Length: 266
Length: 269
Image 1 (cartoon, helix red, strand yellow):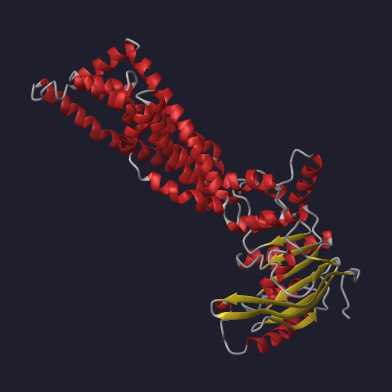
Image 2: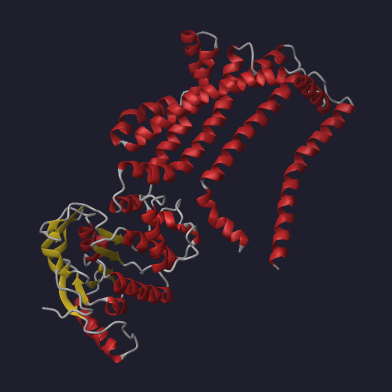
């Protein structure tokens, strides 16, 4: 159906078929997700974009196994997701590092740095996320971008089947964000890790995504899935990029409609 | 410029420290002057110099160390017993909501009971002796550690719990790598408060009926109207209390260095 870039094999890794999720709130039942059907191929980099309240973060949480109250099969490698685990790495909007651990300890987490295999791989990841010289630094000494790179290294150490990123650069300043997007792309091209990235930044969605999933609220559902037929690295100022940006924007404008803050109901 | 800034800060810090000494020194000086002019009744308020002499006499005769040793041992026993129980109860209630519902209301009721209300009962049950005293101290030391351990465990960031679940922390890792470090600042505060209360409870216990220890020394001195000895006792109590608090503070700085790194960087930079 879609032509994929970068010669990734088109094996379905994640299968979501008619997923529905309802939040019970004091104000009544809210359909957070409705009829979500999505297939993610191995090695793919998929971005999910939509206004707040469209359920994009909820969708990611379900794939992460952090939210289990839903209807409809969500299969990773053909198996239903039963809970969180290292095969589904998660990067949250905040880095969520352990403040009492330094960079190396944070990446290792529950794995022992005394194990030479672990140590070597941790150091390799420190190289990959360009944090050399900061191995012994504590989270309080790191900038937002650096801390988020530690979180990415921590997830990658576990060789996840899929890396789930929930607005990972949303809290960073514009310059750091662009830099981090490039860094993430580099990591993806080196490691070929399947990635699902949720964002509300159209530029980010176009710059990173092989496909862009556009979601809209009330109830949260997928409006369209657009394959961005551009080679990496993408030139942000190029006309082709701007065309894609406009295409997504147009889809998006249809989504916006009357300004209702759906998010506050959840 | 950096150096200048550091020097200014140092001057300021030294100035502040001196400022803190100004008031007590002025009081002692005028006190000594008033005593020298025989404006004070030496039985009610001996001169500072008499107190220093009393201190020296008590220290050189070995009496001070003897009583201090006995008092410290009692306080330590009570602290270990009560604080240890508080720590365990706090951990237990912190981990289990059912445990919290079961024990917390009762503990909160007991917490409000003053020592002097409980002491007669302990004396009836266990007599005037070591056990009663240690138990009173333990009762005092229990609550701060219980409350702070409980709060420390409950205040672990739920976002970090999500991370630990994603990383597949085992139960052991959850406790040792997440809950204990996260609760440690609270627990150390609990230890500090418990030690302080153990020390305070010691006086109550020893004043009720002991034949040794600093509380006894003060009560004995009072009955013979040796005011200077009473004041020496008060001073020693204050010093030892401060010393034990400083020790825990040092421990805190070592164990919680990850909290300070940022501040240290800021000062350096």
